[in-house]
Image 1 (cartoon, rainbow, N blue to C red):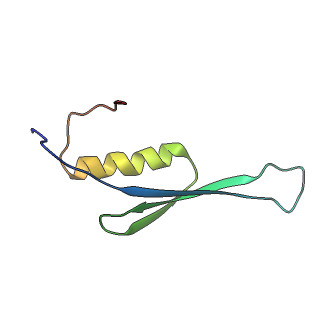
Image 2 (image 1 turned 30 degrees about the horizontal axis):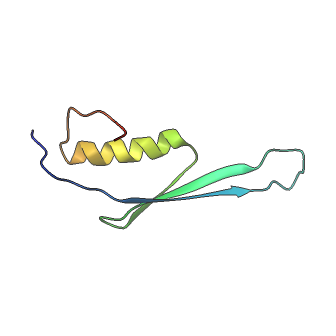
Length: 70
């Protein structure tokens, strides 16, 4: 498959929640919103964020692929 142009937009909100017991570490949570369909997923790690993006690319048939910085 030749991809000439495509774009997917995601909005990532990240926040920390303090625990009731002061010695416990804060819990970090996130919400990923796929702006193309306004689908919202709540996640607890960057691995879960990556899985959501990868699944969207799989659905679009964008394979093989590799991540790069430009």
